[in-house]
Image 1 (cartoon, rainbow, N blue to C red):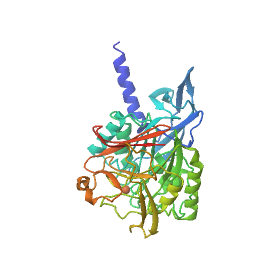
Image 2: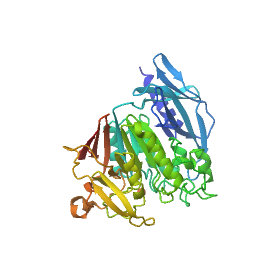
Image 3: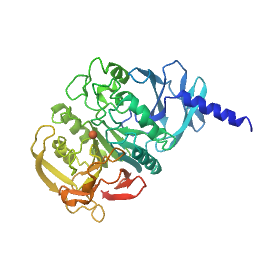
Image 4: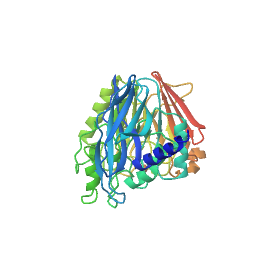
Amino acid sequence: MRWLLPLFLTLCLQSQGTFLVKPYLQLGEAPKVAARERLDLLWHAGDEAAAWSVEVRGAKGWIAQAAPAFRRLDAPPLAPHRIYRATLQNLPPGEVVPYRVKRNGAVVFEAEAQTRKAGAHRMVVFGDAADASPTQAAIAKAVAAAQPDAVFITGDLVYGRGRAAEYRAHFFPAYNGETAPLMRRVPFLGVVGNHDVPFAAWPDASAYFAYWSQPLNGPALAPGQANAAPVTAGVHDDMVAASGTAFPRMTSFSFDYGPVHWTVLDSNAYVDWESPALKAWLEADLQAAKHATWRIVALHHPLFQSSRSHFDDQWMRPISPILEKYGVDLVLAGHVHNYQRTAPLRFKPTKVGSRGKPVEGEFTVDEAFDGKAVTQAKGPIHIVTGAGGAELYDPWQTDAKASWQPWTRAFVSDKHSFTVLDVELKQLKLRQLDAEGRELDAITVTR
Ligand SMILES: [Fe+2]
């Protein structure tokens, strides 16, 4: 047995040097639940030639997958590196599937992938997280303990500026490290926030487009076009090149998970959802999702919230009538660093101002719904779940009910927290948990 320890140590050292970022799962180009599933597996490695391969374990042994492709990212301050992508094909839905990665013929990584479930499942949601703080790490650990089937981040994915160097330093280590090895096991999904878009000072900003792999089924956008994330020529060229077709289109998209249709919207100030093309896409997407039992819209900037911070960032409110028309159940947002829940509500805008100005209108509030005895909701429920790690906003408002808007039903800003969505065919259970797993709020919505 004495030879085992040196072998183990050699393997550890090899695999440490092998990856700059260990393999992580993404939904990739698979918006719909299919009879046989697929997931993308990405990892980052040094800029040197190597023969990489990926295998998935089937009933009769290991099955080789199509050869991984890579894109090179050369955006300082990180050294040039390769972003590899393999698609795991023909997976059985709703199962835990072992997979392994080989480099030059040697196994350098092994893990198990939770494939998308067709029915009941657990989705964990949080936002405004990766700021390298101890609270980010604590929430990551609690999320892992909650054993989600998938994770959705409601924007401001990486602080301070969504840079490649920041992903390397405190995003991947937190969610795919040894204390919370989540991303290797379950797909992470997300939407861009205002910190994830290209900042002119940083050539490695907006690494989102190079590092994530999500469906490209949103509104067609070309670089430089209205509603596309604006880049600076001569600064972001390398990042754009490393992003392939993901830039600029991957900002809005939709996907199905179990009985839920998710519509993911880029709510950044450069996007005008009143523009005919975007509005038409949103209506068509929700219309096509009539078959789904549940409809969730996820975006960074909330429509309705009570915090004094960002209170006037209301420019997404005008889409509310469309969400109501197609029976959206939940709207999940971040941006405001706390937890908030509204009553089910309908909103008719009467005065639409410019960005950063209040959007006034008429509210119809479902006063009967309480999520306990009365669980059928008349209108979308708006959730802010932006307490995933970054410093909390307005903690004093937690106990100052008079400061809440009349339709706010829960407000917790003195604790970091995350949302657990337990989805079933006829029932959707939402719980807000703190870093110790204590329940801060809970509602049930039924059909
Ligand atoms: Fe934000």
